[in-house]
Length: 163
Image (cartoon, rainbow, N blue to C red; front, side):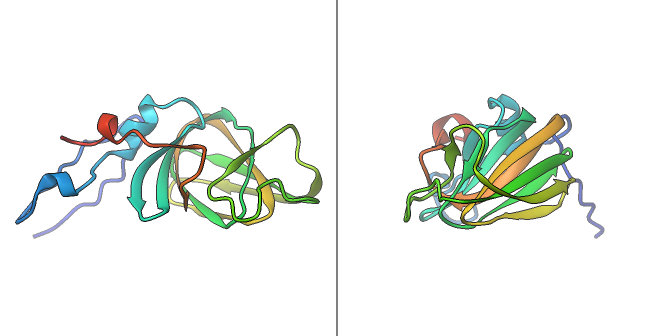
């Protein structure tokens, strides 16, 4: 039997399903990151997967984001669109030591410019501890960010999961 992989996008996705063999569906979380991003505000970080303190956040990439920083490494995957990330190595950390999740940077970050990364669908980037980063999307896209649950993480399980 031949299988065909189809990669979704914000404008073209199919809502999947989950088949439970021998368990209770209430034990599982199942959502569609494109559907979540489509209904989200730009740059809002909405949890779509969780494992203990670790979380996957769907982000609607649209226009220019603010600046963020984190006290631990994070990763981001471009699921749809072309998104530029700019980095600054902070002179003084913005995130409190031990703080989980990303924090917003007030104003422009102070430090040395580290460069930029341009992501296309399927590309991944590291968001290193102690740096500040901002995203730019000329056309609306979708990011999937791996981090630890923090103050900016929106948890909307009742609204986004199959019931």
